[in-house]
Image 1 (spheres, rainbow, N blue to C red):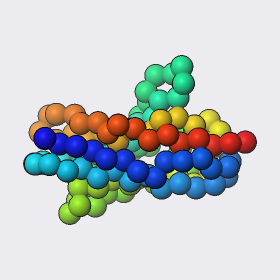
Image 2: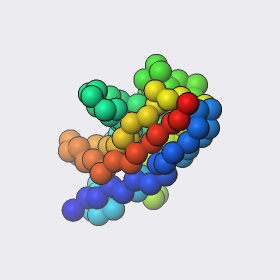
Image 3: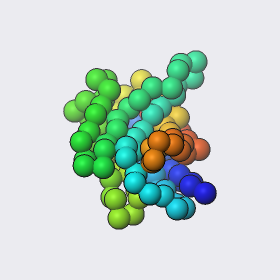
Length: 115
């Protein structure tokens, strides 16, 4: 059974930084895309960033230049470095992993940015 465990969320002032981590455990083959999504109160879940097995990345426009996604394939871990955080980045951040056509999700970690 595949499990994703996120860490690194918290409360930070605007302009600050946080680094999220997501470690996948269990029997996993052929991990394709790993990514981060977020959901703010009253809003739909949105894609933040993704990274493929060949390290090709994709970002939502609102975080370009501020967030960086990376992965360690040997550890089945994906990271999200978030700099210059804004109050509108406040949300629950979810890790996602796609392997062999199946999607797996973490439990979410809260990120709160105060103004």
